[in-house]
Image 1 (cartoon, rainbow, N blue to C red):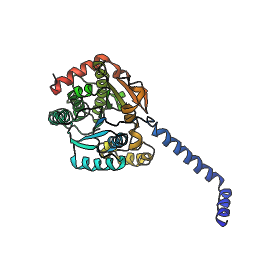
Image 2: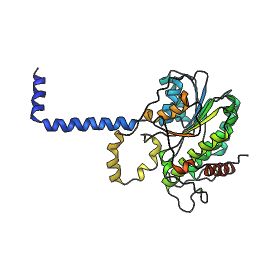
Image 3: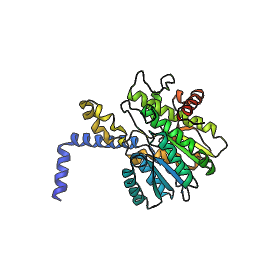
Image 4: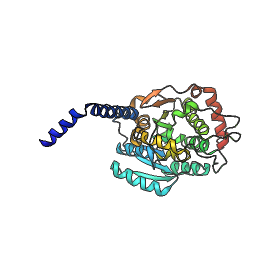
Length: 328
């Protein structure tokens, strides 16, 4: 009773303070809820189906793996760091209750590694129902892949381009099947620099990242055109702004004052679970079975940037990519 009286007295003594705190709290909760976006509501089960996720040992890749494993899928985590991948696999098994989770070695910065994984999958797996090209690198210094490609374009686009093409026969054999490419809203600022694809003349980390994410959307579009009538459908997506390790290269380069300003805002952006929802949606949503080549965000189709809807650019990028990775 005394506690209630004390609270009542405080409220009457500081009504404006209470009102400001309440409105601020409700507002922040509303913004956070809005930032979280929609969740995948599909109840589809994946018993007897096989899913391969690149970069499935952390962030939205791992959360995607947990969800699809819960649905009964055999989940293959294709990762560069095997120690972290094995730990992630144990976590996925524990959280999903599904022990059918395996780890495969994949370094997307090495075409040899990509081909080796593809050979492994083709030799060991009878089917592949969903390929999720999730792994990526963002805003790194101008590094080169093992094959001499600019790192972001090489990892985010070329590695996945080669992997997908190497696994197409198995995907067709398993039809209806899906290819899900995790892109980004950054594609809207992207431009494919056909005359300087590795940005040797003027490198900028964000420009390179945007180019690679635009390449993901264009690849999805052209792949859909080439796979018409095969039962294999393709999807690209923006997962949202998420608290993951993806920002590990650019965060330390920011001025201290910016990090101080941005740190409180981290509370408002998506968690990895929230960020995985559109990937999961594209992988399982039944209503998308006859759709292909489209771009999604917050579990709904969205209109991609004009340069991402350029069929001529998509064909030109395909031809260039095939030449670069030695695809006949």
